[in-house]
Image (tube, rainbow, N blue to C red; front, side, top):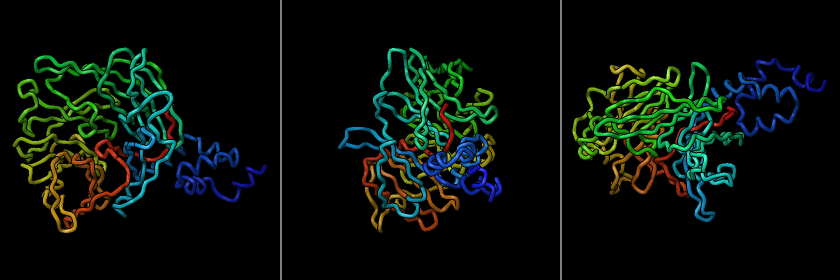
Length: 386
């Protein structure tokens, strides 16, 4: 009776509109108010509505290390805090520890508020994976099997509305790459084999997320043509290709790089998602950092050069050009108006905020040992990992 009277004053649509704007922790407390709120917040349609609104407030999930406690941790914070003030204090949340009694985990994927974790320690049964929603504190674990897989992806199949974990095991043989691929659909406890990728490509740096991204129901990674002949020494930008695996059809295709890319040798290029578009970036002759954007995913003609930024501008702070060693940069975020770019830098593992309009740069100052190049996009959500 009390539940009915409480909600009778407001239309259901208005109630949904109001509470779908609230953070997850507040909604979890609301579940205890009455049965009506608990039913509403647990409804799959409400979870989707809340997720859509949460996407307007994107976060970064960044691995960090607490030396006092000798344990890895995860920091999750809204990107807006960095855009408003590059010097900010971020506190550790005990719920975001990566070391637990059940394993020592590292993040290998992020999608819709769920993090895919891989146990650093292999159990007798095989490699272990965990899907974790830090906001709701819910998780589920899976065992991959005795064979060691080195590359993992996590994403969403929009056709079946299913979250999937993809595991790769690559064999290299005289210029040919044979990739064994397994897929696990969340809600189904068994792994199954899918299309074997027979490609003359080499995919390197298995634990580095700067060469692989999830976008619109696809997973995409960088590969190198004719890797055996080159041994990855002196390769040029044009020898790279983007391989894209569709999570719905579970088939792959190759995306060619833009025709206007520079053909000289380069440091490792990167993939990123900026403003919901696939981006390819690389160092140009140690003088500029170049970012290309594919405006219409899968359409080669839609590539545009988004930025060509002088390192002198990127590493100039308060009028002084700082000496830097590493050219390995990774775009983390581009503001909605396209004016502000957040970049991670391998040099001392720092991050910077670059204002594209006036060519000014600010260091991100956070008093924590943060591994910026392992940062992943993240949103707080009610999505269940089961």
